Length: 256
Image: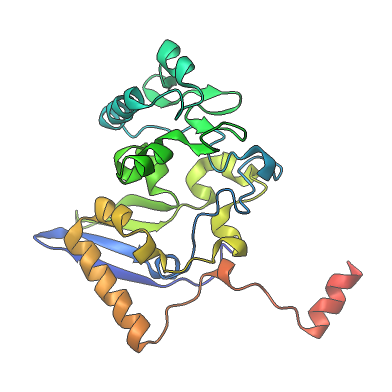
C-alpha cells in the first residue's frame, strides 16, 4: 500500500495566508468506519478479536496538560457501573509517566485503564466513549485527543517560505512509530473496515471541524460534495478495493 496512488487537495485557511491544509482525498472520501466489536482484530502481534482491545492495548499518549486535565475531569464523573477499573484510577491516577515529560493513560491488565473488558455489565469498550453516549455528548469532549482523532492524523510541515502546511491524512502504521510495523492487523489497511454508509469526511465531521476549524472544513466538504455529484470520482482507497488475481497470477499464487 505504500506505493499506492493517492489524491490530495489544498484548502486555504481564511485570514491566514501563511497557513493551509493539505487533505488526503483518497481516505476522506472513502467509506472507512470503525469496526470495534464487529471484526476488529486489535493491534497486537497476533490477531486477538476475542480480547476486545481494539486499538487500546498500549494506552493513549496525552498531547499536553490541557488534554490530560480534561480527561481527568471526565474520569471523576464516571461511576462504578460505567468504568470497570474506577477503583484503580482513583487510587493511582489515570496517567503514567513516559520518559521525562510524556504521559499516557495507565495500563491495567495489558490495556488502557479506561477499556472495559468483555463480561463487564456495561459492555466492552472505552468507558469515556460510552459515558459520552449516555450523557448526550460527543466523545471529542471526553476522550484523549489521540483517541477521538483516530484514524485521522494531522501533522505540520514547515515550508521554505516560512508558511505552514497542515497535512491531514489517515493514521497509518507509521503514525505509531516502529511499533506499528509489528501489528498483525491495522484497520486502515483492512478492506473489511471500508463498509461505512458515509464517506469519512461526513461520518467524522465533528472530529474534522475540531481539527481544522469550521471554515476549512466547510471548504473541504463543499469540494468533496461537488466531486461526488459531478465527478470525476476520487481515487479509491487501496484497502477498499481487494486485488483480483488474473489467471496467470492465480496460477503463480497456487504454486507458491
